[in-house]
Every structure is written in C-alpha cells, then in structure tokens.
Length: 138
Length: 138
Length: 138
Length: 138
Image (cartoon, rainbow over all chains, first blue to last red; front, side, top):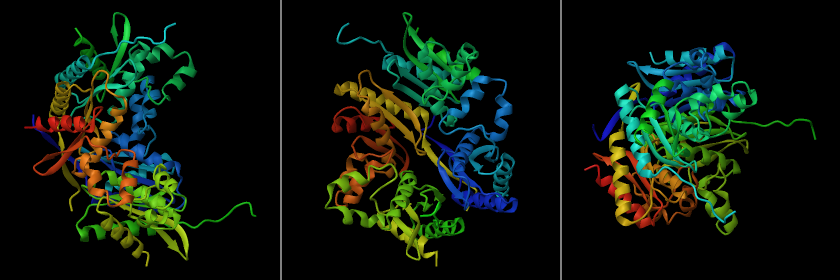
C-alpha cells in the first residue's frame, strides 16, 4: 500500500454555486434557510444564513451535511433504520449527526465528494433547497 | 480502606494488536472501519481509521468502546433496557455513550479492563470486527 | 424603555458579496483563505474555504469576525490592550475571541452591524482580504 | 474551475507505521508517549497511548499534529512568531492548536499530507519521537 491516498472533494467554486442555488430556491419557495456545504473531510466549505433564518438551522444544516456522507439523504435515514431501535435512538446523538431530513450527499461519478445540508424550513422545503443545490452542479 | 486502589487496564501492546486484528478483519470483509480501544479509565489507547472510512464512525467507535465498560456489548444494550424509557431515552444522550452495536468489553479474568469499538460498516460488520479484536487477545 | 429594541445587522446579500470579494482578493494575492462574515448577533452569515486553505483558519476567521464586534480591527487589539496584562492574557482565552489580525468590524452609519474575519494567509494578507470584503459594501 | 479537487492524505498503513516507530523511539528513550497522526483533512488516522503516559498528552499530541498542518514543526512556531505578540498570545488558544513542540508536518513531494504529534515527554523527547515517525516513511 502506498504512503498516501487520494481523495476527491467538492471544490470551493462548486460549493459556492450550490449554496447560491439553494438560497435562490428558498427565495422562490418563500422560506428562510441556513445552507452548508462540507467537503469529504467533513470540513465546512461554504455557508449561508438568510436574513431572519432560524438560528437552530445553523447547527442543523451542518449536521445534515455531515450525516449525508453516509451516501444517503438524511430524510431517508429514519426509514432505513427504523426497525433497529438502537440505531434510531443512537445515531442522532453523535455530535455531528442528525436523522432530520435536508441533507444530501454530493456524488460525482458515484463517489461521495461532500454533502449539502439545509435547515430552517419544513423538511420538504429543506430537501427541495438541498436538491436545488445539487442540481446546480449540472 | 486503603489510601489507594489498584486498577487493571488493557496494555498498549494488546490494544495495538486488537486494533490491527480488527482492521485485518475489515479488510477480509471488505468494509472500511474506524477502530478504538480504550482502557478502564475511559481514555483512548489505540485508534485506526482506514482510508475512506466514514467520518461519523470516528466518534461512533469511541462512544461504543466507552459504553461497553458496562460489561456488555453495545449491540445487546437496547434489548436490556428497552422496557425502561428513562434509560432508552436517557442513556444515549450522554456525551460518550451510544446504544449502537459495535462495542465490546475487554474482559480479563472476568474483570472489565477496557473496551473496543468499531464504526463504519453495518452493525454486523462492526460487531464482527470488534470480536476479531477481542480474539487477538488469545 | 420599550419592550423591545431594534438592531441592525449585515444582510445576507451583502455578507455573500463581502465573502466573494475577499476570495477574489485572495486569488489576486495568491493565498488560500477562510472567510467568515457574522452579524451583530454574533452568528455566522456567510462563509468560504478556498481549496487547500489551512484548516486552522476555519476557526480563526470566525474568532476574528466575532472579536471585531468590539468595533476595532483585531490587528489593532494587542496595541490597544498591551499595558493591561489581565486583558492580554485574558481576552484570547474566550472561546470566540482572538487578538490575531484579520478581523474587521462592518460599520454602517457608524454602527457595528457585523464583522468579517479572514484566516489562512499571513496577517497582512488576511487583513487585505478582509478590507477587500469591506470595500465591496460600496 | 472543476467541480471537485484532489487532495492527498497520509494512508492508514503509513500512519500506523509512523505511530509504531514513534512508540519504538519512546521505548528506546525511556519515555511514555501519546502519538497521533492526522490526515490532511484534520481527522485522526492512528493513535497510541503507551501504558502510564500522561493523559494531558492525549489532547496535546492531537493539537500538535493539527497545528503542524501549517507546514512547520510546532517547536519552531514560537520562534517564527515571537515578534508579533498578537500571534503569540492568540494562536495557541484555538481549540485545536498549540505552540508546544512535538508536532511535525508529513511532507510528500513537498506537499503537506498530514501531521504527527507526540506528547508526554520533554519537548526534546516529543520532537525526537515525532521525527522517528517521519523517518519511518522512508
């Protein structure tokens, strides 16, 4: 095995475009959002909090983005683990995790290169804004 | 009572061998794991994160190792406490605890001398890798 | 006194423009930066981490932005307090403060409405990028 | 600019070899060490705490490894910044930083791909053990 290994991460340019697209979607939907994009190392790349957005969403969107590194949208997580109470009760207590919807993995060529998380609206609004961020990747 | 008391803990040499064995098992199973061994004082002795392993597992494996100091594998914890909601809802909010499977106590002569936790795969994979760590103690 | 009071804060639109201007300045200077804008409530409004930027700067830029709510650039803080050891030794231990240069208050009509912090380059580069952010306010 | 960017990080295999070499050096010197290797994303890859090693060093070695991502040994940091009191008083208060010697960047082809930090001995012992870790990369 080699001394180093390569990993791919969402670029800042793309992360900023994703955040802008999520904010534009929130404006369209009439909701106020916090939006975070993290890279594959779990570190914040780009963030936005719209004027008046719920402060709880600042932590929430970062937890959602981090948890999506699983490779699954956080809105699907509960359904995936609901038959295992130890996971349901356990997972969302990790300091950076959550089962609340609004986090989506950023996949490029099938590889998770980061995550986007949105918090501040309803779960449906959060997911729609996160998806708008992904759609901005083209 | 005396001025001091003795405690027994897993040695670093054994902890390192356990981590190596858990990593070898993960390679055999084809999963990417985080592995932690803590001593009876709750402090980290040895840790490994395989290339590409889920970052959530870094915290997860340490919580699992810590919680196993109960003397019970974390995969058995939910079943043991499920009829007491105060425990179910309470335990996993502790900053170092979790009910997620993948943590096993390290027992020597019936005494808990530490814990091993594995996170990053399915619960079954996590438990299998933790068990491989224990088996390395001979 | 009334039941409530008003406060003015940097808008998200302006915060995003400031971050973009600071990043553009960093590209011009050839350095890699972390940039944060916080509002007058001390909460993150907009953030950017350029590809390859020093991870220490992620915390650093947020501390700088927060500390600038004093109404003074963080690069001037040490000189202002150096004759009072209780301040010198005390201030930077606060969890959100720092005396490292690179934080500038955002003033509108003489009122502090937020702060911008930049971290990842030399102090001179950090201050220049933060200033470029302020200049974007027009 | 592209959607993603590549980054190189120390592999687990190399990180584990570095930790083992640092521990071997500590045994040779007769000191008890905590050793951490982090990757370029700032996340823990491998860790060891020798039996009886100072618990303060568990946090210390991780701070040293993280701070070395600057590209400079932490033992050289004070000398580099001593004429700027704002840096001397400021830098080591960041939650993951320290100016204490014992952290060395892991450089491959001139690129920082991680950091090793050692804590528990004298600064000279810590640096010698960290260097032994680097030497193991061959």
